[in-house]
Image (cartoon, rainbow over all chains, first blue to last red; front, side, top):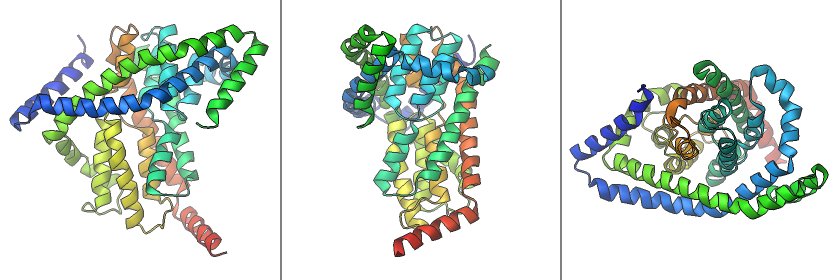
Amino acid sequence: MNLTDFIIPSFLIIIFVHAIYKRVDIFEAFVEGATENLKVAVSILPSLIALMTCVGMLRSCGILDVLAVLVSPATNLIGFPSQCVPLAILRPISGSGATAMLVSILKENHPDSFVGRVASVLCASTETTFYTIAVYYGAAKIKGSRKTIAAALVADFAGFIFSALTVRLIMG
Amino acid sequence: MKFLFPFIFIASIVFSVFSGRLEQVTNAVLGESLNAAELFITLAASMAFWGGIMKIAEKSGFTDIIARLFKPLAKLLFPDLSTKSKAFKAIVMNLTANLLGLGNAATPSGIEAVKELSKEEKSSGYATKNIITFVVMNTASIQLLPVTIATLRLSNGSSSPFDIIPCVIITSLVSVCFGIFAVKALCSERNLKTYAKRKIADEFN
């Protein structure tokens, strides 16, 4: 048993005990939150179908392998797995697309392999850049997003490099 | 997406003719919607479960407690913002929700934060340094518990889906830092003043 095994159980205990102390109807709150999120999930399904088909087509036609090979001299230099290059390209553009790609990477390489871990860390440590900027700026009617995009992509790029580095250094 | 979708279909079919993978692409078209249904079940279950847990935390005031812990950090990142302002409160709520992995809960308060920041800084709809910093922090994302990813790992055979947490925390922190440094570099006082002047001049002409 290592430390990370304790994280989820402790988190749950803290929330439940605190909720009992505050006299919250736990089951009712849970159902309310679950229903809300379920609705969101359902609203994502059509786009998910479209995206998974696109990702599947891109992967199966071989164009991503070509891209990965083109970039491989640079990525090999820093130890970034070439199978994750398409994921890195897709992540800032589409969240569901990246999830779809992550799933196919996890299926082809075991989740606990180096490639599987780097892919998981990459997805977990960064958000869908263009979508987030579009939603926030669109809803708040903000203009002038070039610097935001530039800075956000710098952050994403650092994230890609460090996802490979941390997995290599911490997990071996 | 509206351009990307048809482009990908056409491009991948055309490319597959040259790469000899036409059959595989057809299989993808036929089969990927089934994979999507499979993924949906995993996602829906994970979102529903953790959404329920987070609702409990919200109702008990747990998220408010965490938000209070974040005030000093938010003060550090947005020094010229008053802690009493609506923008500040929305920023803290958004960062807290992101940290706890409540991506969907974070969006409404994120939008409100951007709106309030724009109002307070009187930028007449242009992205100010604070706004850019805030949005970049959202795109870089710091999640302590990547539960969706972990659920995906588990359903694909991982023996310890959460063992990536230390890597995720470090990588998230590093990417957010890089993002903030990039904003500070791109948004030096001189840069912003000339940018704003140019935009206002454009509007007058």
